[in-house]
Amino acid sequence: MSAILTRIGALASGQGLAQRAFRGSALTVLGFGSMQAIRLGSNLILTRLLFPEVFGLMALIMVIIQGLNNFSDVGITPAIMQSKRGDDQSYLNTAFTMQVMRGIGLWIACCIFAYPAARFYEIPELVWYLPIAGLTTIIHGLQTTRVESANRHLQMGRLTLVEVLAALFSVIVTIALSAVMRSAWALVIGLVLGAIIKVLLAARMLPGTPNRLHWDRSAVTELVSFGKWIFPSTVVGFALSQGDKAILGKYLTLGELGIYNIAFFFASFPVLLGQTVITKVMIPVYRDAAGAEAEHRFRQLRKVRAGLTAGFLLLTFFMAAIGPALVQLLYDARYDSAGPMVTMIACATIPALIGLTYDQAALASGNSRGYFSLTLVRAALFLTCFLVGVRQAGIAGGLAGQALATVAAYPLIVRLARRHKVWDPLHDLLFGAIGAGLAAALLL
Image 1 (tube, rainbow, N blue to C red):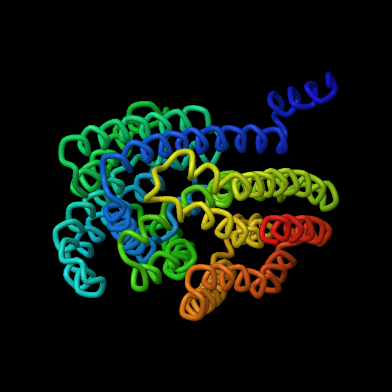
Image 2 (tube, rainbow, N blue to C red):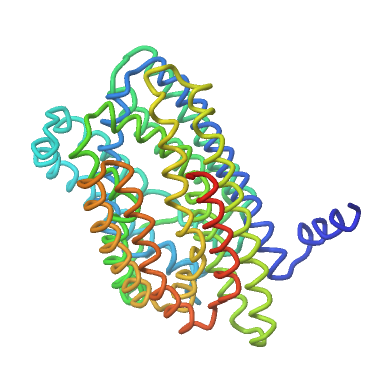
């Protein structure tokens, strides 16, 4: 026991790559877990103040806003994290200026798409909800690049505090509005106020020089050069992150979609945590490991990758196993059908966990084109398999299609990983077998 504690202490205090990755991962997990706990508490209160249809409506609103975000992302965050100029204030101010311009453009797009979206989903209220909710795009465009700088150097402590406090204050505001208004407007207005809170906290609490509007042509050239493949990557990445809700929104009632969204909240926690940790940690890890001797670099990456995958798989199994009982314990009878969905959704995400760390190697080396190619194929497979599955067998069929699409994309993940010399077949074989066994135990 003392040896384990000594090892943990060494990881927590050292300055090596593994130690910094461990601290960055631990703080990211702590922050994400805290925010999800806050979100769960909010969810439990809001489901007693509002109706399932409201949550279905908000799910659609977030799908559309996230889609517009993805359709305009030029990769400012990964560009700052991997660029040699990532600490240059002129470069950062130029990125901030581009971010502001993008936020304004996104809000205009929200206004334009409000009416077509209302017609497509046959929900007239979207005409009013979307332009208001879309104000968050302008607000997030004003967020300081000190957030990206903290991620770049794996300085997660204060950044985690900002994110947790922002989530807590936002929830308090949303609950208060819901208690008074008892409608979807409470969630829409709470969304906007929450964005304002986060931007103000980041500007106030994170160290560094405040941003100002600035235009450096060389920085623009570098950002656009890197982002020209990030932009289409996030466009097709929309299918991977929101495609299920976009498709189900056409086939389910708002009440059913609201119930699915609650099940998704529990079941997707491990994979969303994994994506959050890996996005924040793996680019710096790959970047810093690049100069090491090949064998030593591979050993370092294997330790980091194995630790992350094992933790996420264990958490997925735990969530899938207790999901039905958890839903029954926390929610009233209107939401009982979400219980079995938790297990099915969690099992469908297991294949994605195995190769979760590989694509960041492409971004760390500046290969945004390779990242796009992989994302495009994954998105096409996911949309096709999920849509066919939903049409043939409802939600269960869609989730089976989701898992099948991930397996089908694996050879392309291997190809990308081998190109950047980070593929670990032993890791994939071991954890693939464990994941298959866990899924079988849960479903059979």
